[in-house]
Image (cartoon, rainbow, N blue to C red; front, side):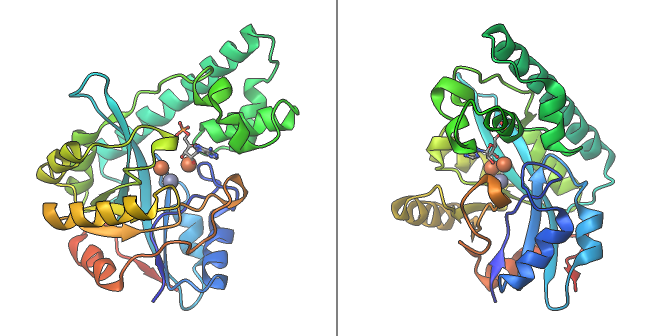
Amino acid sequence: MRIDLHTHSTASDGTDTPDDLVRRAAAAGLDVVALTDHDTTAGWPPAVAAVPPGLTLVRGAELSGRWYRSEPSVGLHLLAYLFDPSYDPMVAELARVRRSRDIRAENVVALLNADDIDITLPEVRGYAAGGTVGRPHIARALVGRGLVGSVDEAFAPEWLGSRYRLPKADMDVLTAIRLVNEAGGVSVLAHPRAGSRGHIVPDDLIADLAVAGLWGVEAGHVDHSPEDREHVRLLARDLGLRATGSSDYHGDNKTVRLGAFTTDPAVYEDLVAGATGVAPVHG
Ligand code: AMP
Ligand code: FE
Ligand code: FE
Ligand code: ZN
């Protein structure tokens, strides 16, 4: 069984449509794929409609979270699986975060414009194509104008990595974990040691999240060194958390391939057994 529990489609900052993504997952030899777009469940219906025979789809999302109990606060990503997408408090929080992403994009464009970098909001929105707006869409607008050579380059400190980086109103991670649990889902802390993409999530913070109802933590990830992966696996064991592995596939926006990292079948079975919001969809 090959199980990849973290992928993005055009519903957020991936480049495959949700239906293409499930087809590609099957073609890549996966048995299970989770669709985990940033702060949205909009990709679920088209993905469900396209699940090919032999593939199982796990419906999920990657929530933009933040730990506000330290100074500075710590941004982190929370993978949420198999939760009820109609649970009102969750629907409201997701909508609030997406709105904050729209406002941030507008402000980043204004900041760029103030330095005579003439990309426009409609251009950025065009790359997002109705999905959750993220920095990769601003990055693609910069690439499109020939200002940088690649999306990756656009994340350098002199661009979106620092100089033109603005915060968005992330979910309090304790609220996020609670809402996922209330909606019958399970939550997994994404790439805690992916330092290049944000701040490393300290182990004692992960311990607090475990107490707050976190279910698992992502150990296998392209931005984790082999030492990081081992460290996260041992930490998970110590804290009574499950450890997952996933590609974090974003289509052409990143180089990682589907199935580059995978999750143990026993951990996947546990995940399904622990969720009551929605069921996996078998093609
Ligand atoms: P946002 O959530 O809008 O702040 O944007 C963060 C997203 O940008 C992450 O989910 C990654 O998918 C993407 N990202 C971060 N760093 C890079 C990079 N160096 N190259 C490509 N994509 C990146
Ligand atoms: Fe992303
Ligand atoms: Fe992430
Ligand atoms: Zn992701």
